[in-house]
Image 1 (cartoon, rainbow, N blue to C red):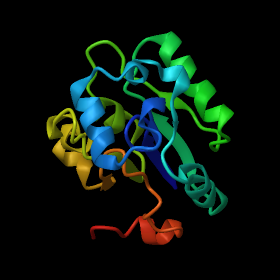
Image 2: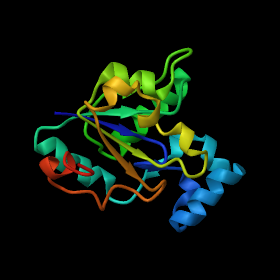
Image 3: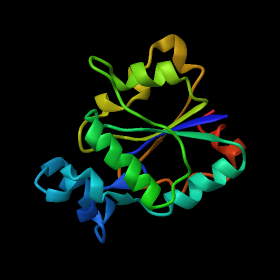
Image 4: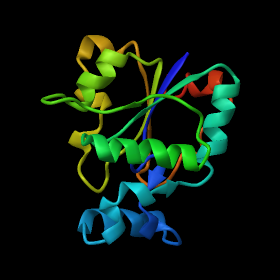
Length: 165
């Protein structure tokens, strides 16, 4: 069972978002002026994402992470943040030149894709909607509110895969 999880806005947030409501975090991102938005090295987990993903891993999920970053230095920072906070090991996948998120997800073909609703940047950025239609039926799409975390998702991997079906 492969689970691909989007990083920014789904399980990680900018350090300046700590102590703010989800709505305030979205406003910070939408405004773009919060200095920590662009500092991948200082990102922090949203809620109890680490514990939730560990539960899925302990039930047999193979975890991969999808980053919005393309630059190799920022991708390395993403990996360092995941390691720092004890997220389960798994590859951090970035888009290549000319690739959309949908291209990456279609290539990886996870059983489930967990991502946020891209409220601050527009729903056209949701990866699932960028996947070729013939591949969408093979992937369980789980969309959560941006900066709202994944704490509310089922602990059971089996139940996770039946959401929305």
